[in-house]
Amino acid sequence: MDTTLSTTLRGQLNDRRHRLEDAIAGAGQLDDLVRLLQQVDAALNRMDTGTFGGCAVCGESVNEADLLANPLVQYCLCRLDEKQLDSLQHDLDLARQIQTGLLPRQDFRCCGWAAHYRYEPAGPVSGDYCDILSARDDRGALYFAMGDVSGKGVAAALLMAHLNASFRSLIQVGLPLQEIVARQNRLLLETNLPSHYATLVCGRAEESGRLEICNAGHCPPLVARRGGVEALGTTGYPIGMIDDRSYAVLVEQLGPGDTLLLYTDGLIEARNGGDDEFGQARLTEVLGRHRDLAPRALADACLRELRGFLGGAPCHDDLSLMVIRREA
Image (tube, helix red, strand yellow):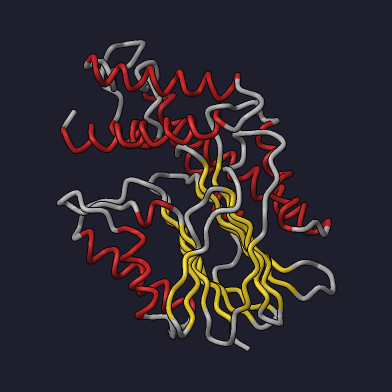
């Protein structure tokens, strides 16, 4: 395993370990979190002893893309024959089609707001979650959400579909944002998958310009106004980690031309050939420089800046971004 890959994977594992330690410090139910922490420690120990990345069944090396998708994986596809591999590819192709079908239309207008998003999986399917919709009532509001399920691949994609269905159902019930996120947290915990959690930011934009944001451990949304760009912090833990957690809502007032940018860490953590990170500071600068662009054009500008920064280096993580601009 080359040094760059090893450094990247060790960083992912240590980041996951720090998050778990923080969660355990404030948690009531510890069993699942402690079990997951033990899995992370075991993976770090395999790195220290030189056995990390080996298949526990055949001893061959696990595919690097699979390790980047989930540093805890310990198995390769050694037991699959050609027919089984073809069947697996067919299932992945079908999963990609279904996931694409769950996405909203790319350009969305509602009650004085315009929105556009980009959704770029690192593999056949993605663990990123992206949604935009309007409630079927007279409240005159645009709802939006972006999330990132831990890991990538089919397991993360299945949980992304779970988020999609529950988010849309809870909105139509008319629940406030903080309750929607709290219920999403409980629903994900009930799946009994302690190794998977998700960061989630969702919001409600009214015709008056009032903007509500509830952020469960996701990347800080960026708001661009004429006076500059502001990062909005988190208001609670990621969902699926700790039960019985409450979530707060941030309230902002956006004027005509003001813009909100949501994104997943696949954007800001992308690294070029020199192992430099794109970073939130660079994204903030791009947003400030192009804040007057329409949502689609602004998304183009952000991704163009990213491609130039990468200089041909591949993205190893799912990448999503969403631009929401107040028009009136």
